[in-house]
Amino acid sequence: MAIALVTNVLAPYRVPLYAQLAERYDVEVLCFGAGASYVPAWFGDLDGQLAAAPFPARRIDGPRAALALGRRYDAAIAPVAGGAMLPATYFGMRARGKPFVLWASVWAHPRGGAKAALAFPLVRHVYRHADAVVTYGEHVRSYVTRYRGHDDDVVIAPQSVEAELFGRPVEAQEVAAWRAEAELGEGPLVLYVGRLVEEKGVADLLAAWRTLAAEPPAGATAPAPSAPAASPTLAVVGDGPLAGAVAATPRTRLLGPLPRERLPVAYAAADALVLPSIPTPRFREPWGLVCNEALHQATPVVATTAVGAVAGGLVRDEQAGLVVPPGDPDALARALGRLLRDRALRERLGSAGRAALAGHTYAAMADAFGVALARAGALT
Image (cartoon, rainbow, N blue to C red; front, side):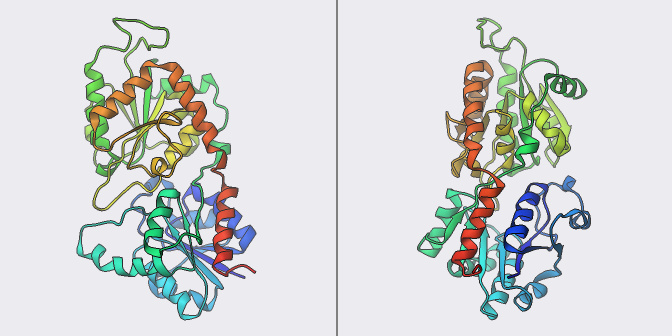
């Protein structure tokens, strides 16, 4: 039974999942190459991704081709993202009586603009009538269930990254070399990785960091064994329209994009990862895989309740990190300052966070897709 999975690009963190789906369920990945506003440009071009894919993958030429998928495939999977590709795939499979599985990431409907308002009735119809649904986490599962009225065929696929890459041992010499290359000094380090845009809460992060920068170095007047002696640095990996604001903020280093294979060293070097995303009319952080990446190195996370990894249960306050309200720079500054001053807290949260990743594997994700496909009637 051939199954089509329709998506935008072959992001590196999805390649291991797609390889397992192809091997287990005869899935072919069809990429339309658009609607990737949350996918960094440095992931590379689609043609290169397709050529390197270790599983069947090809381009699909828009909604008309999606409508015709039922002629060739016995079932289809499609995500919420992608504009007209979702309803086209759904109705194309429906027209031929073929099973359709929705891959849902959204946990708040985007608002603003006539286009979103016009599209929502179609999307809502798919939410209600898809044969089964795979979701990013419990937060998305709850959202989808509001439209379906039941959750017996809504399955969670725990969001995952490559453990062999992000959890690899990082030697002290690697950390020292990277810090020297990036001119980060030897003091405490807070790391941000992602797009430099409004919805990521970058403005709040910079406001919080200016508050911390105005304070004397932690432990300067009252030294304690766990208190850092030097001023901390905020290292920012990524690019975007707020790059200039980042560069102008005291005690901040704008590093630009960093190759994925070097990210484990950055996470190992950091005392904390911060993800201060805020909800906007058009966006709410679906997950935030940088949380998984950092926790593989036992680096604790400071994130807001607008982050999917928080709402979905991976990053729990006082367990895998510290959680603050979105849009509250003062709370963010307090959380970051607390972590920087308390080494024992950092170690406890980081260790607990790494343990929390035990169920977040590609095998578990593939299992969830198998359950959804079976409930949809796509597997015999």
